[in-house]
Amino acid sequence: MTPKERVNKIFSGEKPDRIACFSGMGNVTVEGLKKYDYAFYEIHLDAEKMANAACTSYELYGFECAVTPFDLGIEAEVLGAEMNFYTHKGKEDIVYPTVKKKAINEPEDVDVPENIEEKGRVPVVLKAIEIMKEKVGDEVPVATYILGPYTLAGQIMDLEKLLKMSFKKPDKIEELLTTLAGMLIELGRIYKDAGVDYITVREMGAPTDVLSPRMFKNLIQPPLKDMFSELPKPTVLHICGDTNLIVDLMWECGPTAISVEQKNDVAKTREKLGENALIFGNIDPFGTLVQGSIEDIRSAVKKAIEGGVNSVWPGCDIWPAVPKENMIAFVEAVKEFGKL
Amino acid sequence: MVSEEKRREILEKLKNGVIEFDEDLVREAANEALEVGMDALDAIMNGLVVGMEKVGELFDKGEYFVPEVLMSADALYAGLDILKPHVRKEDIKVSGQVVIGVVEGDVHDIGKNLVKMMFEVAGFEIIDLGKDVPLEKFVEESLNSNADIVALSAMMTTTMLGIPKVIEMIRERNPKAKILIGGAPVSKDAAEKWGADGWAPDATNAVKEAIEMVKSLKKEVMG
Image (tube, rainbow over all chains, first blue to last red; front, side, top):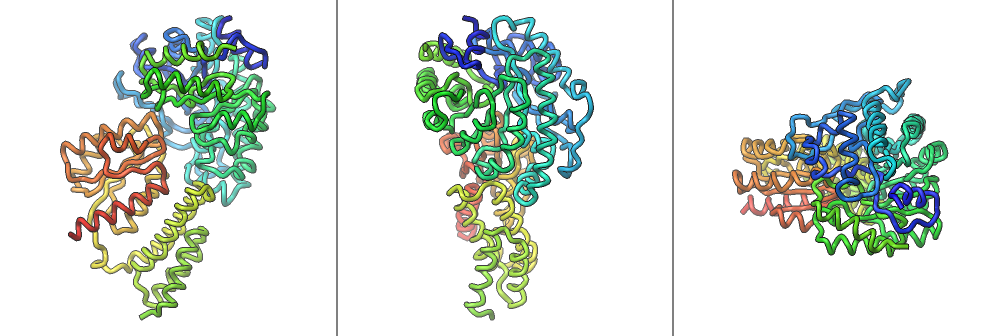
C-alpha cells in the first residue's frame, strides 16, 4: 500500500494496513535543505525550491506526505501585510518568516482583493503543488494548509488589540472573522483545484492557553464551522497548545479529522469524542523529535497510538534541526507500533 | 495624613479595578489617593500590584485568559500614569536598568510587555528593544547601558534557541547582569541548563518572577 492509498483510506474511515506517519504542516528538515544546498529563506520564495524541499522528508525518511508552504504568511500577504524573510541569513540559520508590517489597524479596514490566486505568494504555492504532484504525487499525498480566521486576524492586525477587542467588542471581531473565513474558503478551493489531497486549517491562536472555552465557542467556532462546511474535503483542524477542554468543540466544527499537540491527552480526547472521530497527533516536535533519544521517540509514538490516534502527527511543524536518525526512528516506530 | 481606614478603602478600589479591568475605577481611586495625600508608591505597590498578582492567580487557575490579563494591564497602566509622577525620588530604591526584548525571528511581544510593565512599576529604567531583536543587540545594549537585568523571551520553539546564544554572549562580556528568560516553549530545565537567573513559562508567571527578581535585586542593591 502506498502512503497515498493509506492516507486516503484513513480519511475515508476505511481500515488501512497500519497507522500512517504524516502531517498537514511544514516538515522540511535541515537534511532536506542540504540535499539541494538551499538556504531556509529561499524555499519560501521560489516554487521549484519550495516543491523540492517539500518532498525531501518523504524522500529521506519515508515520511508519508509532501506539504507546502512552510511559513504562516501566505494569507496575510494576500491581505496586504509585509513579511520579513530574513534573506540576509546564511544556510545554517533557520529563521521563519514573520510579519513585518500588519495589514490593518481596525478590523473594519480589512479588504479582500479579487483574484486571490494571483496575489502575494499564492502563485508560488500553486506552482509548487503542481511540481510536487508530478514529483511524488503518485506515491504520497500532496497537501497544504491555511490559517484559521482568528490566527489570520492575529497576523494582519495587532495581536494585543485583537485579543482585547475579542472581549470588549466581539461584534467587530466576529464580522472580521466572517470576512476572513470567506477568503480562506476561496483559497482552500483554489488549492483543491490545484490538486491537493487534503487541507489542514491551523487555528493556532486559539487554544485554552490563550482564550477561554466560552470565547472559543462564541467567537472562534462559528467561522470555523462555516469554513468546514464549505471547504473541499478531506480537511483537518489543527490547534496547538492546551485543547482537552475544547476537543469536542473542535470536532463539532466539522473537519474530517482533528489534530492536537503534546499538551493534549489523546486518550482522554478519544474517550470524549468516541470511536468514530478521526484524531491525529501528538508527538512533541522539539522536546521529543529533536531533543529526545530514539527510545523517547519510540515510547511517545507508542503512547500516542495506545491513546487512540488514527495517524501519528507531529504536534506542529517538524523542527528543521531534527536529527536524521530521529526522523527515521519516528517513521519506523509508527510502522512497528501502528499495525492494525 | 490619611486614615488607615481610608487608605485600605483606596487600596481595595485600586486592586479591584485592576482585577475587574475597570480603568475608570482605577483612575478615580488613583486620583482620590493623591487628593487625600496618600503615598503614591504605597498606592502602586499595595493596590495596583496586588491586583495584578491576583490576576496572575486567576490566570493560573484557568479563570482568566490572555485577553483578561491584557485588559487588567491596561487598568494598571491607567493608575500608574496618574500615580507615578508623584512617587518621591528617594522612594525608588532601585535605580537599575533593564534591557528587554523578544529574540530574532519572533514577533510575539505580549509577555514581554507585561514583564516590562512590572519593571516600570518597580522603578526601573527600561530599555525596550522591541521584538524580532538581533541577538548581538541584547549584548551591545546590556554593555552600553550597564543594565542590571537583561530580560528576553521567545514564544516559538523555532526562535527559542536564540536565548542560550544570547546568555553565552552576555556572560562572556557582562558577567554581572541578571538574565531573566521566558516564553511558552522555554522549560525550567532548559533555563537551568542555559544558566539563566530567572525563568517563567508565560506572561503572568513572568510577572511574578520579575517581582521576585526585583525584590532580590533590591536586597542586593540595598545591601
